[in-house]
Length: 234
Image 1 (cartoon, rainbow, N blue to C red):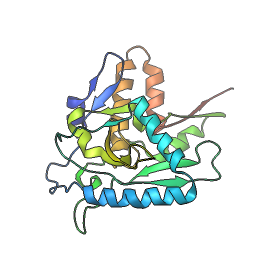
Image 2: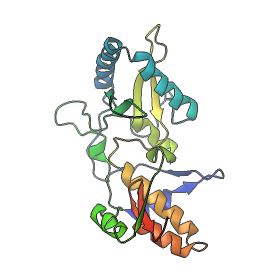
Image 3: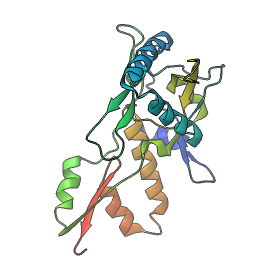
């Protein structure tokens, strides 16, 4: 599976890595879930209005549009088509981001229909968490790091983006519904940890010749998007 991933992994001149979604070869036909997504959108907008969060939710999606994380979907579908429902999660205790948008790639168009996540390989390619934590305890001084928006650093190739469509309202005033799609791996997709792990592995491989010892240490100290390591002194 990793070898197939490597074959389709490319890197742009700017340094971005781009890959396809790891589809299961024998997955059943995937219904597009368009009507289910529209129904969920109606409920979500109503809920956001009642909570006074509609403008804030809209601002998050508009910011993702500006950054190229999502883009307007073309009318002509390329490859598989799926519409991912989404909803707000509010964390009052959070210091920074109190409102998050959660995308449900496990949603089904109807009972017993496969979800998008059912059709994708989740993949291995991860250190065991207990192994990373135990290794870190050998250092007198612990260091930890976290990659910012890690999944969103992995770009998805054009022919797979229509499987990551979603609905939103183009203008709050008119409530006209528009179709957007993700250009990056997203939180909620079962294969995102594998895709991120594969990109990191390849990037470290590219750096191994120049920094063999550092790459070796980083490889054993990573868990998904977290680095847990340390040293003898501050």
